[in-house]
Structure formats: C-alpha cells, structure tokens
Length: 456
Image (tube, rainbow, N blue to C red; front, side, top):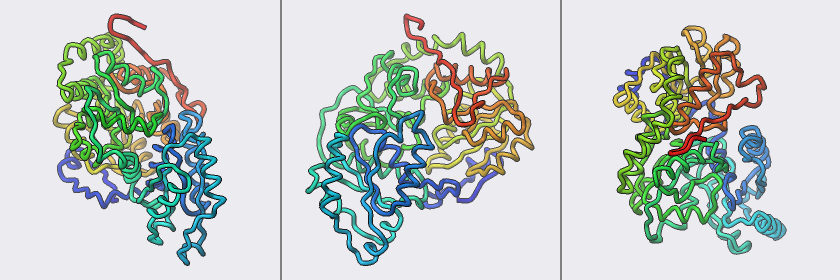
C-alpha cells in the first residue's frame, strides 16, 4: 500500500484506503503466521502445513523468535504434509498410509479435537482443492479436519489469516442453536496465560468485579469446546481488536452482539469498553465502574504530574495504537508524532473516533513506516519519550531517547490499572530505567493491582 506521512486531520478526512490495498511491504510473515498464532495458542488444535519444508522451517523459526519464551507459542509441534514440485505439476495429492499413521499418533498424543490444514504458496497457486484432502484425513484419522483457504507467506495482510482461522474454528457451530447466557466472550487474545498479573487475567478480573461473567476467551489458551461454548454468550468484546472483523458481524445474527470493538486502554477507553459490554447484557454498571476507576485515581494523578506536557512518539498496530492514544490522552502528553504500522479497513473510523470523542491531537502521523521514517522522527521532532516495538529501541538508543517497549511485556496495559502501569513505565524511563538493557528481552515491572473493598 502507499505510505502516508503528514497531518492527522488530513489523514482521517481524506484517506481513501481500500481493503484490496492492504498490502504492507514489511509484513513478510503473511496470513499463515497469523493463523498459526491463533491455533498454536489453543489446547487441542493441530496445525498441519501443506506444501514445502522451506515454508514450514521459516514459520517454525518465526514462531520461536516471536514469543516462544514469553508466550509459549513455539512449544507445540507443527507437522508437515509434504508435496514436492513433481506432485504439484502432476496433480498427485495422494497421502501415504504411513503419514496417516504418524498424524494419528501425534493427534492422540496432543489430544487434538481439530486438525487444520494450512497451504503454502505453491499449493495455493496450483489451485488444488483442499477439501477432499481434509475429508480424507478426517475419515482416516477420525478427527474433525478443516483447512484455511488464504494465501500463506505472500498474502496481503495478517488480518486475512486471523479471519480465516476464526472462520475455520466457528464453521462447525454456526448452523446450531444455543441457549443464551448473560455472559461475554473476550476476543483477540492469543497468549495462553490467564494469570491475574497478565492482560487477559486483568480483563477477566475487571469484569468479575462489576459482576459480569466471561464465557470464553478467543483463542489463547482455549479449546474447541470453548469456541462452541462461546456461542452461548450474548456479547463479544475485543481485547485485541486486530482480529475484529466480518465473522463477528455474522455472530451478531446468531444473537451475540459485537459490544466493544476497541481494546480497554486508558481511563476513558476502559469506561467505554465496560459500559458497552454492560449495555449489551442489559445491565447498569455505572456505579461499579466508577468505583473501580476510583481505586487507581491517586496513583494516576501523581504520575500525571510528571508526564503532563511531555513530548512523545508512539507507534503500534491498528488495535494497540488506538489503545495507547487513549492512555496518552489521559496523561495529557504532547504527541509529536505517531506511526500506524498496518491499517485495518476500520482504522480511519477508529482514528476519527479518537479525534472527535477524545480530542486527540497528533502533529505528524505515518502509515506503514519504514525504519528510515522513524529515524526522521527522531531527527526532526523533540521527543522526551519513545513508545514503540522492540526493533525501535535501536533508534531510541542512538538518539538517547528514553524507550518503553509496548509489544513485549507482561504487566497489563489494559484497564484502569494499565493506565497506572504504563504511566509508571514512562516515569521510570524518564528517570533512567532501561527496559531493554538486554536487547532480546524486556525488563518488566510489577503491576499495580487494587480490588474493590481490598487493596493488594
């Protein structure tokens, strides 16, 4: 897609981004990586790469490099159903009996309840129909088997992979009827952890404190059964809005309202999120929400005295950037520049929401930046604090700008507590704390956690 650099108002008023233009040059990982991130985070889904060893090895390396240690994404096996060029040219997609035997043993060992086939680029280009292959595996192995129809490495955007994974997971349940409960699903989470001090645990506890029950988490740490159970909820709420999209409008037709489409970042953003969920469930939780916010007010105000008017650069994907803008708005910092690494079709709407409802003002914004664009920001703008992805630490260090990583962390950035946690990080960075003294791993802080009627 074309890069954008310029004014914020011009971007949200005149940007004419079409979905077919969502190619992002740096996004070489492709839709298959996005699908794998979701499936590998689930308890009982076995992902099978269909095609070449090269693509499989690339994906294995990438999964390990992008979160094996922190988020356990690389611990599960990724088997291969290999076809070489001769097989593809001749159209010979038969499966050896020995492969069926091996995959059945692996599926039983992994306690798999679903097998998903992910085609590599040569398989897609050849135009082979994977449905007969999936049906053959289902018959011989005895496990529900489906496939992802998207491109692999060379796709337009990771978003396609998220959508295809969700479609595959929900396909067996869309034609069934379920009795509805007064519950909500948390959507978009891909890390398995439910620990209270991590983000999904913080969201579950935050809802519990205002007496709202979570039905399922989609998809991190969940099972195929959890996906089916999610059909009983009355609402879906985004924790990571990167995976928001068409499927959740289909689910609205099944009685599951898409209630909160932006992640619960910032005081105002968190109140929006909680209120929209409560409204979708027909509940009035205004007093409880205000009480929960009040727990963190003292810490928030103290940090704000340090951060107000500080000059900031911030970057992120389509969900995270909007969330971080919420939090930075609370602290009334001066956003010199921002970068949106890859847009969704609804990014313009989200940015307009931040401008019109939350009065966000950004001097300069870049869509689909390269590292050269980020270095120009460091050169041309006065920046007191840099919030960005891990690769940006080198630019920040080069220009001696305090750096806070916002893609590799464990202490929550969501909810009222997340405002304080992120504020504490920004304050620490200003005081000289180095979050990336080990260039491969962020040095985290302990989260701030309070509870109604009890401080922890």
